Length: 146
Image 1 (spheres, rainbow, N blue to C red):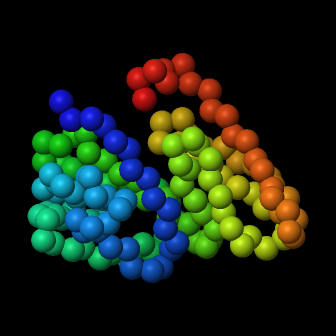
Image 2: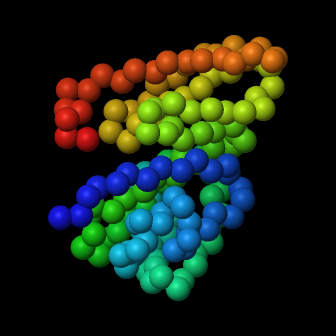
């Protein structure tokens, strides 16, 4: 039985995003992938076959969460791209930590997202020359199955 590996990426709105068999975000997803069906909510953004030799480039023109799934018998294969207009975004590592560098001093609202547990918003003060920290804890009654 294949293991389930969730892939998440962050992308800034506008630049063309590439998906192919060399892309770190979807590398494991594409190895067996026959189809990449990308949706934002209920809207299909694209639905293309992706053999290992094919490269697909798509412009992400608005903010939101794009879910990519294989519709051809690979129901365990999925990935997410969180599209934002901000150049400041990150994906957590295995420990759940992240770093966003070169953020100008100021007060910001940060949004933390989890595919099953939803969103949380936090305000954060960034001071020049200092490290700022936030903590977001999600409660989950079914976390053993994640």
